[in-house]
Image 1 (cartoon, rainbow, N blue to C red):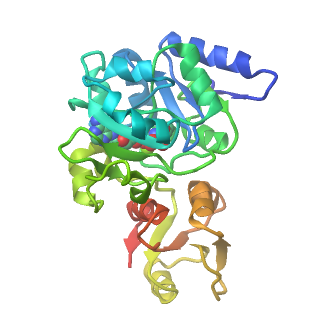
Image 2 (image 1 turned 120 degrees about the vertical axis):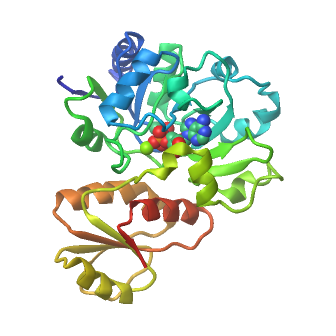
Image 3 (image 1 turned 90 degrees about the horizontal axis):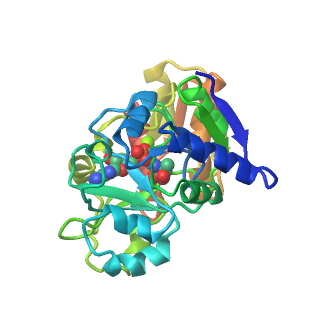
Length: 328
Ligand code: TXA
Ligand code: MG
């Protein structure tokens, strides 16, 4: 299969969206940009189409997918509950990097939810993604557009590198604005809880959900969000999570490496190469891109210092720990 990449710009925006929507309507799959990471989309209510996502990504069947919508009617159409009580929180965070889990209705094929009785839904804040879903007129099932286990792609070249020959079309909408996957919020249990931390933080959600479970627990995450038990976000470079610069010396011995890069929020005195970011937002935006580019440049070790466990730091710690070969 030949994989076409189509750039979206103002002149041919409608043309590209129309072409992609045609492919999706026929039951095939298309990679498209969102504000978090690139997604690999298929008709969200068609088991046959969704099967193609699992095949193209080598994704394990017990890892459920998120349905992407462009309006509230699409949400109403797929869940088994009244959405009115959730309108306040959704109006605040949607479109945006928040995925909610609610009880599903019978229209949602079990392949999407890995046989769970709940479904994950998100309205992305990206012009291309919203226009595409709107043009299709149906919701799009879309995991991140990488081979299973690899870093989520945050620009079109990363998608191409993983999925070239496996999908017919990539819509190139430039770099993703946020760079980390959405926060996954379970609203189907007795108390709301975060199953995957993201750019929308506990601190931001709590005022809307006074009952929100305080601590994010990896154990809860593993049990309730089946996908989270797998190795994730991992380039073909060793990654270690360090507490201090001293750990780098030890890591060098352990891994017998030569080409090292440190990703950091602080200036550090070292002879090694360092990528420094001003804040957690900047670092989040570039983390997967750096993983990919350092891999391509032949680095054999990436060192990242643990983040302060608050705000976006929680999401960053979650991702780097999952990607890590060793944690100090
Ligand atoms: O930002 C994002 O969320 C991106 C973009 C493309 O929207 N998508 C994404 O999808 O990260 P994916 O498939 O890589 O991650 C979906 C996560 C997995 O951890 C999965 O286990 C969880 O959502 N999930 C999906 N349905 C669920 C459900 N019914 N109950 C619990 N967890 C669920
Ligand atoms: Mg993913």
